[in-house]
Image (cartoon, rainbow, N blue to C red; front, top):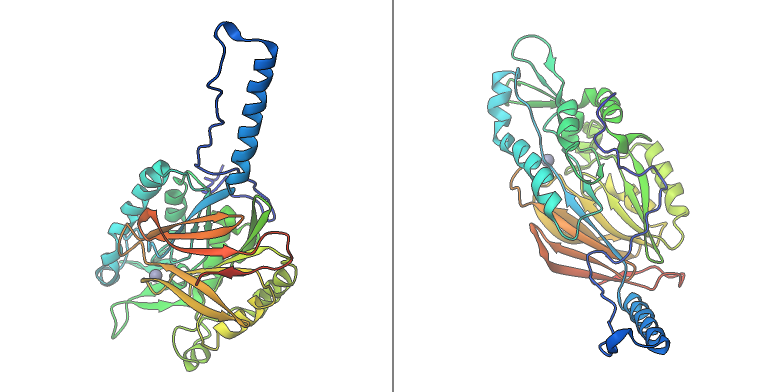
Length: 364
Ligand SMILES: [Zn+2]
């Protein structure tokens, strides 16, 4: 049986309802208990007080779930790789053990326990490397599958440009990236990870109280549009027309859901981002965009339709094992925590009440 890295990954459209997460809410106990067990009336009053306490408690608390955003782990196994490539890429090698440690220790001991992890790409440093001898070393996806299977919670992954490329030694540079293998790489990712069972772009939902959160994971790691992409300037990544078509249908059906988008290359003002932003604008509930690629952390407002939406980057795990961020979703707000510090909220987005037909996130 093939190892299953994310066997808890919900299927598309699966809804998860969670009660208040990590908030203890003890019902008040009667301090007026009568010695000797009391009469029926006292037992009845005790019951009423317990019931009232629980009811008040559930009114006071907002149901919530936590998840972790992490990006750019650049996992690698450089055995058998061409020595010039080893020289060029080994600076990220320590991140592989650090991420294993993160999954098996930190993630397991976090309280409240996160419901899942979203990884916004560059899971591996390369899909493959030219070998020291002939041929190429193409075992990185399987290495990542083994490592990520240690996660105690489901992982949802967006593919990055490094996940879709082969490194070769170059004439001028030590390592030259080649994305002509992107189709082959995607096939390997789909086979290895359950989150890709419906393809490398996908959606899933979580219910939090009366609120439905719609997560949309895009695949914008392919930059092989080459001159077209480069001519537009910057780190432009283009979504294939079929992915935009799928996204348009999903956004048209988003109702009053709160939408969280995850993708590798951040959205900007470039020509590749514009059609993505225009398509997301069809849904008024887009509240958050999670991205990676740039390797630095940021909370930056971007324009989607006529609104400002927060784009969140949490730094590259490959640069520091403290580059990950806790995010807490309730039916009333979204709380963003400091990178590497799950105890400190640095931004709260207030949501309009669920079921009002108006979806708005404020507090950018
Ligand atoms: Zn990266």
